[in-house]
Image 1: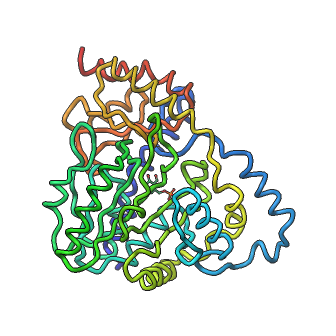
Image 2 (image 1 turned 90 degrees about the vertical axis):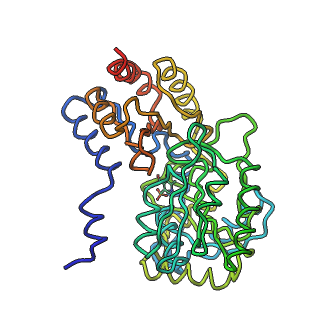
Length: 396
Ligand code: PLP
């Protein structure tokens, strides 16, 4: 006998990976140039040169016994301090190494935070559409996921719907901006109003309601003068997770962090619980080589301009073909309204045109499909006739 959740999770598989593997199989069968894989958020732009330069330099200069050795479980304190100073410089904060825990990407960070915070029966509010792994982690630690849909059309937070969903058992609200899969960004006004609402609700409930701010797409913003609010500066009980997968194009290297700001109520205990959860889950000692690299690349990103080019091209052309979608201000996803009610059927039909999309149902928002445009612009251009033909198959 095995734990039911593990068995079920393993048998079901992550649908995004299933579709992406199907795309790889089709590429072998008919040639990669004939397959338009818009399923997975795997950045196509290379990491900046400084990443490899720093890694090579580190390998050449740091003695092997030191470089390949264990570090403290949350990471080397001078590396955590460098991350803290980088945040302080950007956001006017006063963080230190003692507020940070380096992790295996945002996935590791999210799993640790959920394990550290949730007691069985605690409610976690997810704004739908949402990144599906939130529910995988949260439910495995006994949390109950409560879904609050973002507003249909602009995918912004509906504060009245949120307020109606909060109960005495609400322990956490997950906020992901720029958003996967909708691509929307929550404005400063929204975050200010959200913070006010949660402060009021915390006072009523008599216990903290944490915001889990998950921001792996923080630097991927397209709007002119668009500023992403830094949620810990608005709301004290924010636990913050970040990943270098997207903006530095390093998804396979598994680097990210958890920030527990000193303002969080019972900070010492929350941070201790994060360390304990990391230990329980086996997420200790993020790769030492990549820890050594981190301080040199903290203020760098890949060349993210291609994503804006892709977004603009797709928005213009797909709108002409008759697709409906919210204009994304960040991340690298378009959330298309399915031309038929059944989004799984729509994505199956897309496969006939060698276009791979992910049904909105996978993100808790049926009737839509996610198109991930972190591919090269040439692929986008070559996919346009297929996307047009797909829509025509409904209208003609
Ligand atoms: N959070 C969101 C919103 C994501 O979209 C992803 C990955 O796509 C993750 C977390 C996990 O990222 P990582 O590669 O750092 O584990």
